[in-house]
Length: 201
Image (cartoon, rainbow, N blue to C red; front, side, top):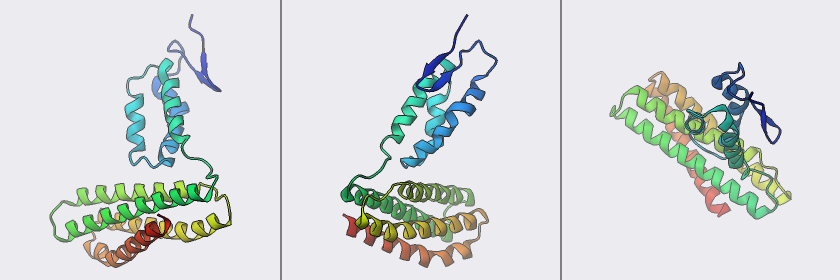
């Protein structure tokens, strides 16, 4: 008779129980998608599905530990230099997402790609900037100088996220006019983020 095994504080249910592997993933593994996103993996869902596909319940523990280890690099910044470095990386990610969005808008205006391609491209950029914003927001500033960095960087990340979200909506609607209208705002945000990266380097 199979018994239950454990992985830290997590219970791993053997195949002989009535819980199916899919249910096990829903109950135990799926919450770790947020951990992968916290370290800015742009395809956290794909990482999760790849790691869990075909795993027996007895191996689910190893998958959980692997995802948990990814989140271990996200934690409190103990010094200003560490905090500033994370702010810089977040700004870089957001700036890259905006550049991707601008490129997608240019392609859409030139009608060189179909709507779904533009929509998916901007969706990926939206998820990237959302991850950068939420990841940086979760880091506690260690001192007053870090507070000032937070107050300077976080609003720009939020504005970038909002602007790309609007572009994502317009792309889904194939609303080229709205995409064109968003271009100046996105361009200004790109310059602002690039300036922040330079200041934080």
